[in-house]
Image (cartoon, rainbow, N blue to C red; front, side):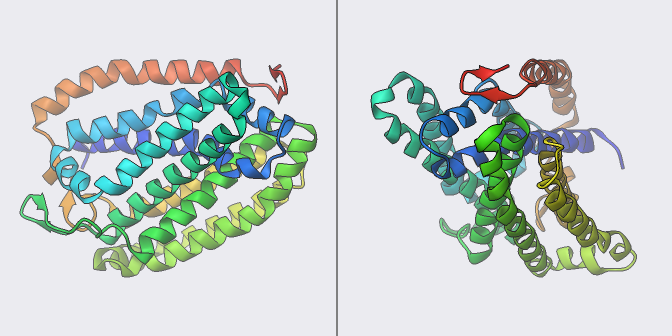
Length: 332
C-alpha cells in the first residue's frame, strides 16, 4: 500500500541511510585516528574530510526532525526509551566537532584535540549502534507510552550492535582514505582495511544470527515460507560483497573498496528492513499507527519537497568540487 505514510517512512529511511553513508566514513577516520602517524598522516586524513564533514550531519537532523513531525507517537515512545544513548551520541558529536575546529587553531594543544576527536567519534558511533540494538530488541510499551526502565537499552545485544557499528564505520573510513589519498597513508589504510573487512563480516554474521530470535515477528519474516526464498539470498550477497572487497584492497581501483563497503552497509540496511517493516517501533507500533494526521503530512511534505532537492544539490556540488585526491596542503 502506497500512501503518504509510506512516503514519509521512505524519506526518513533515506535520511538515515544518507547519514550513515556520509557521516560514517568521517566518524571512521576519527575512530582510526590514533593509528595514524602524528603529522602528515593525521593532517591528510583531516584534510580529506574537512570540506564535507559538517554538512554530512544535515541528514541526522532531517531524520530526527522528520520522525518528530511525521511520526509523533513513535518519537514520544522512542525518545524516553533511548535518552541516555542519544544524549551520549550528541555529546560525542559535540566533542568531535569542537576538536576538529580547535585542532587547527590551537596547535599547542593538538594532542589533546586529537584525543577528543577520537573519543568523540568512538562514543558517537557506539551510541548509534546501541540505539539501533535497543530498538531491535524491543521497547516496552503500554498504551501509547514507554513503560520500561532507564537501563533497558543496555544489553548484550545492544553492546554487540554498538561494537559492530564502530567496526563498520572504521571500514568505511579506510575505504574513503584509500580513495582520497596516495603514498604511505594509502598503503597504511590498505593494511588496516584487511582485518577490518574480516571483523565487519563477522559482526554482520553475529548480529544477523541473533536478530531473528529477539522477536517472533523477526523469525517469521526471515524464515517463513515464501519469504525465506528472498531472505536466504542475503548471506550469499554479503559473502560475495566481502570477497569483492577483499580483492579490491589489492587492486588499483582506489574507489572500489569504499564502494564495496557501502554495499555491505546497504545490505545490512535491507536486512534491517526485512526484520522490522512496517513497524516504526519494532514489534509494537506500525508506521500507520504512529503517523501524524494526513493534513499535517501534506503540509510537511510541501516544505520537504523544496528543501530536500536543495540539500541534495549542495551536497552533490560539495562532493563534486572536492572530487580529487588530497595531500598535506589539501585537495588538488
